Amino acid sequence: MFVNLIILLAVALLLVVLALQNPNPVQICCLKWESDPIPMVVVIIVSFLVGIILTLLFNLLRQRRLRGIIREKENEIMELKKRLIPDKKLIIPLDEDDL
Image (cartoon, one colour):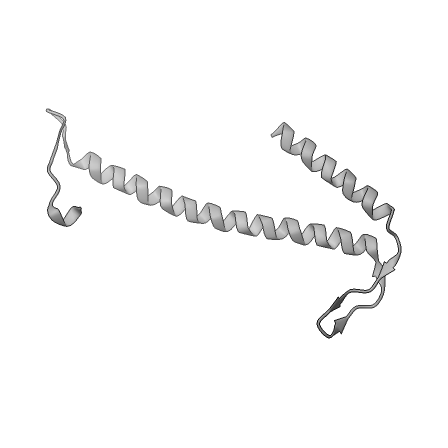
C-alpha cells in the first residue's frame, strides 16, 4: 500500500512538471474534427484522468468476473462437502452425469 502511494505521488509530480513546462496552446485533431487551441496542460491532465478512469473501469469488470468465478467454486465446494459421509469421511461416488 505504501509503495503504491509513493508511485502515485511520483507520477503526479512528473505530471505536474510536464504540464508546467508545456504551457503552449495546442490544437487537437481527430478525423475531420478540430478543437480550438487549448493549453497543453489541459490536454495532459485530461489524458491522465481518462487513463485513470478507463483503468478503474476495466479493473471493476475484472473483479466482477473473478467474484463470479469464486462464487461458482464456493458452490462447487459446498456440493462436494455435502457428498462426504460425516462418520467415515468417505466420498459418495459421482454419477457419470456429474463428470
